Length: 637
Ligand code: ADP
Image 1 (cartoon, rainbow, N blue to C red):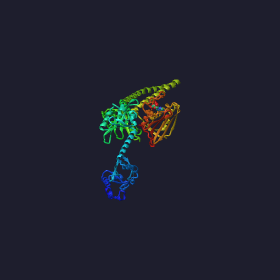
Image 2: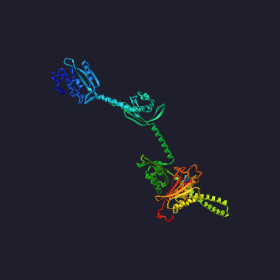
Image 3: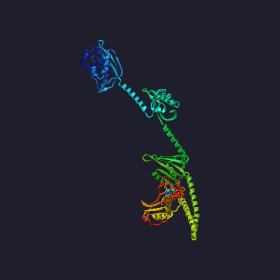
Image 4: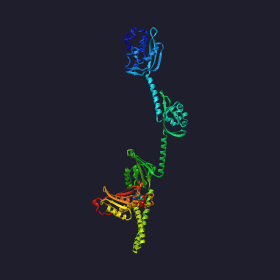
């Protein structure tokens, strides 16, 4: 600026040629130019301007510099002249002016900018001692003012964040923890109103005292270390009664710009509801665990993603181990002949998501045990299997009892068979004798006795068959026969015993089956008898045969009481009878379907039922159909 000032054409200004400047002007200009403080001078009536290097930045990059040098004040500052000129006049009247952080927008950097100034205007006298100029010593405080404004704004923002936060937040100030800011959530959590704001915490919320919070807060104030805790439990008076509350809590030191700690910022999340639910779940889990333990069941959980198998101590114990092992260690104990049972169960599991099987294991101490395994698969939203969870039971004792029962039934029915056969023989002799004698009345009585003996024989035979089936001792005699012919024979025999019309819709087209004819007939008779027995008010029974994919299918349909979904699988088990209100009306011991389905299974087929309660049932079975070139062969096994 010294260079510029020296070379400026002052003659063209009212100040006049440099050589003719009064001493007072020379002195003040030289002070200005050599000062490191921003300085500026208005001189003479036209207020011609001088300024130094330190002042230049305040004029901006593409603004007033260098035109401002030697320029008239009014020409240079049209935008602020209304503010500045009165001050200049004051100075000319002999009064210095001081102003701090005053906003005086100026045109610089190509636009009108908000600029803050701290400045003094002081009079400068000429050689005659008369006030002839104004010295401006100034400092731009825009940055200071803006950073203060930013600070204020960020404090405002913080307050807004706190007030609008969906979780409880507050700021506590000073050693007595004055509640400076507290949002609705915090007031709700404390069970108080906004009146507590401005009061010390433990005065505003007295029930919070004596629960350890004082020490925690004091420690944060002292050390500046943040405190966090999850699931913290405490008591508060809310809505007139003491309540147990669970929170996740954060105490953070509130630091000033000199990093001294002036207070504590608090965030609290009320998790009372979640904690209550979690507690309930834990109690329920504990109860379930105790119940499972008491029942002697072992539990397992297999994670399909990681392959990790978790077993309970009882699970390990059932397999004869005292520590958890790998899956292979457990299932490697399965009795070799029973491994297929587990494999078959897993095939069903893939389709149904349910696991069920019973098999034998040989434990490491060589003892043989029976186990039952049950489980369910849990899937993710896309249906991908995640886990298999289930139980295992040692059923050796019940298997032993069941074997004892089978043995007893086997022996008892065997022992019964001989006297019943003898009775049957005597009845037939008696029948012949009465026929000869022409005793019609006695004959009809003896016929009834004969009928009952036939029923008894069927019952005994069923019991014998069932026990033989369980132990695998039932013998089969094979022959080839045309299935539809067997149906016709069986239906003809049965039609005599019932008033219902048994309709045949046979389209198995001479399909030949290779099986034990008598046993297949026994199965069909059983199904027809049931259809008759369980449809007391119906008029019809329909028997249907057809062929599909080289398999023979036979349906026996009735229009009777039907079977509920939950019973559809169970009725094929031994001695299972549906326990409904009609139980006394339908005699039976629950063996017929077991025997029939076992026969069909043994012959390579399947048996199932479709039914609707109150509308009737259709029992169906399939059997393999013999290829045409093998139908003539007669074989017996
Ligand atoms: P039983 O007839 O000797 O009781 P089954 O093994 O033949 O034994 O049948 C078992 C049970 O299945 C019956 O007690 C009955 O509850 C039910 N059931 C069998 N067939 C039918 C049918 N056609 N309609 C309704 N329920 C049936």
